[in-house]
Amino acid sequence: MNGGRRREWPGSTGHRPLTRREALRLGLAGGALACLGRACQTGSKPPEPPKPPPGDEPVYELTPGDSLYDDFDGNGCFQTNEGRNLATAGALYERIWVHDDGSRVVDAAILSPAPPVSSGGESFVQTPNYVLEIGCVGQMLAYAWLNSPREITFADFGSLRADVRLSSRSTAPHPSAGLNFHTTIPEQPPGRSWWVGISIFKDPGGSGALVVGQYSNLNLGILQNDTLGAVALDEWHVLRLDIVTKADDPGLGDQDLRLDYYLDGERKASRIPEDSAILIDPARTGLGPHRSLVVTRNGYEGDAFGYFDNVRAVYRDRIA
Image (tube, rainbow, N blue to C red; front, side):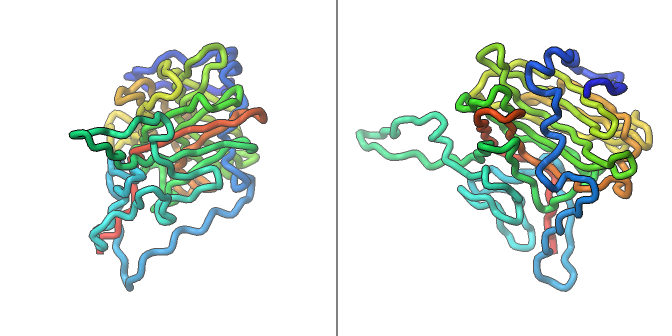
């Protein structure tokens, strides 16, 4: 799976790629994220798009990639015509999220409980700070897809980022939590997955974790990994994936797109995938493309738990 040709952007700030031995140790070489559920099969029918809001001629625009999608405290995915946020405090609103049973919104206090705050001799409980918990229990992976729009082109992707925390509660040998962008390429036999992601992976050889950026073409047997940095379990880190085209960087070719991986606000690695000309043309991709937050066991043992907050990405805003 790691035998593909590699193109690196000349100005890359990238850390060294993982060796095959390191990839196997982290559980990366199997490409567990290559298939998000049963939908990722040859010939699958794409999911139905979300229904538009009422109105004879609804008008939409795509917001910038740094827009707040959901902070789980009731802020995000703003709808101008309604004068309010669609996000709901302590819940996953259906027009913003498509998710499986492993996803729920919880008070962050359960992660690091703190005593009640005292002021003037009077104790009171702090306002809840909600975060998304994704638990992968008894399945290979669990996820929450971004809706509004559920499907977005590579050219419109812009940026996807979130605060991510991989829990030490995870008992799987190779648990991970992170961001994923996924599609299929029908013209490449057998027409299966292409995906790119950035995730925190537990280091089975120690007490910490590694942040890894990776992309894969399952049809061509490509899996390219870049280590972005060492982190600790139970810590929040900002993971960010950008997709850059010539419209953003004139130095790119007309059919190029560049993958930029960021950790805590710093660009750590960049790649230009050899499939750029296919990916940049919406008519040549199949299922999706979908953006998701994913927690995976990367195997069949134990459980995995990840937490997410302050999701920022392009969303669809109805403006009239």
